Amino acid sequence: MELTTSADRFRATCSTARQEGSIVGFVPTMGALHQGHGRLVAAARRECGFVALSIFVNPFQFGAGEDFSSYPRRLEQDSAVAASLGCDVLFVPEERSMYPQGRPTVTVDPGPLGERLEGRSRPGHFRGVLTVVAKLLNLAGHGRAYFGEKDAQQLVLVRRMVEDLDIPVEVVAVPVVREIDGLALSSRNVRLSMQEREAAPALFDALTIAAQLARAGERDANVLRAQMARRIGAEPIAKLDYVAIVDDATWEDLVTIEGPARALVAARFGSTRLIDNVLLPWEPSPAAVQNTSSDEERR
Image (cartoon, rainbow, N blue to C red; front, side, top):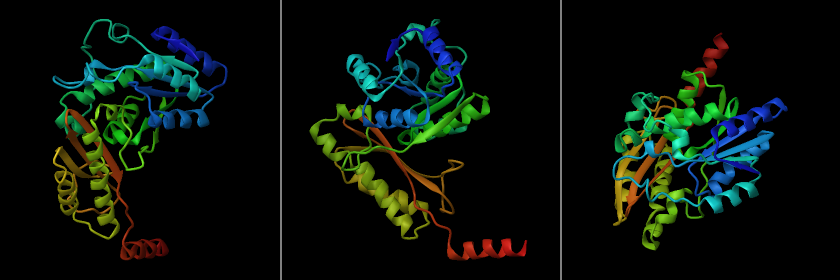
């Protein structure tokens, strides 16, 4: 595996791989690699002839008082993990390399969705995310880019950016990887105390409750939100940020669930903020299926 801190070298290496006939699979990360990242790399390894991984803790997606300075950084360990996963090149740029002039004056506007949910809790977060992702995708060039579904709002915004700006990249989503008790793997999990770690699966419990209600036929999104909030509120050390039920296509908040929908949660456990989500079970009602079949028969 080649390790480089040079943007020019990274771009050239990916370009050479394409010239030699390989599809470039790119996995952008902030490091502190875990099994979730491993799943992203494994997907890229299966589907592409050349796998590139980046590690960059982007300062412009962190707000005032957030954990930029304390975000886990362990380059030596991460380099060994990336090599063991079969990466072909590891790009680890310095901040001055990514932002030679300091904070960029031209950035990517995430649009209205970027101001909701995570965007409301973390103002400016998605502008920083999309700006650095656009830079990284441009360096990696044509190919496939792999993102985890745990950061579902980020994923949908990256997809919209790629489509709206005609970036020649196929965005590939990879399912959430979880601990045995349901906690979604995250680089921030290492900062949880023992007590906080024991409480953190409340997020997945809340999502599971919402999924069970949806599977049983509950279509009132407010009922699901209330039950999710109640479960997280039952943990004394959990500080709820938000619960949400959104349309999985438009990401608009729902009153009544009438199609594929996603449940999302965010909460703090001590100083560590965690997020999670699930796609809710959905099946059209028998009447809707019958009406669709009748329409097709008439045509």
